[in-house]
Length: 351
Image (spheres, rainbow, N blue to C red):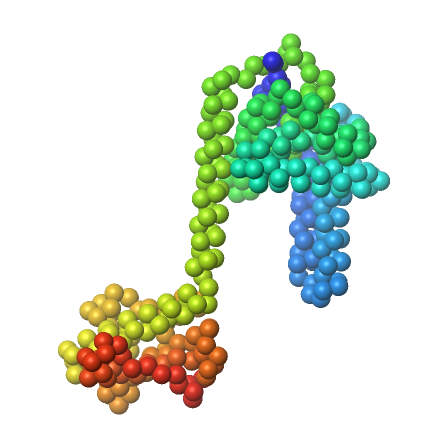
């Protein structure tokens, strides 16, 4: 089965962009600014009632911008007069657009739950639901069915096309971000060309997707999905390891490490170190720091090195505000127990 030409789609996208470059770059800037402004206001206004309302308004703004952008792109591609006021023209389709967006998202998320690949397939199959609502005023379920129909037999090619657009926009981003003013409009118009082609396929002018292209695409998708899964695993692991209990255990270990280094220093010099820096590099490889603040632990030497105090604040201890201190090692106690004495200091203020 022949499918659309990716080269032709990009050529059409570039050709349409050249006809109105400043208008399309301006469309990208305006929608990005309005979207970011709406999100910023929603995130930074406190209060349960007003915060919830602003989040709903932000969601509505994103939907309206998506609708208006789709309409303008369709009109630019079709060479129909359009301007920025068309961003709000299709607002009468708001509920249809919202419904089809929610339905498509549910289907795609459900597919991702089923080992990711079904989600990718669903995302490709339902890629043009929003176009069908704006362009043909279809009802949500009808738009889903029509998107499934027009993408049937072309989904491999759509996936390859999506990867090409991804790489194109990565290239645009590498040009200090300014390249996106070109690559995003070109990508969007190329996608409109694919949508128009799928509505009225011209298979005699189409291309055949080779087995090699499919295999390479599957490999790239597997690498990308695997990489994302690995990063998510690392992120989740870091969250699990970064808990108050884990941080307090690290603090106790650090304090013990400082005590042992100070004891070695005492054996050699007959006095405790004047500062933690004096332990580097002979007695400690580096100065331990608090796992949350990344600051060194407060250390104070007394009576010309006859004693010292090193403290930290434990998150899981309420007594004395969590302040936990160790003093100069009791060497006899250390020999008997293998551990230095420790206690909480009520008169040391938490830092």
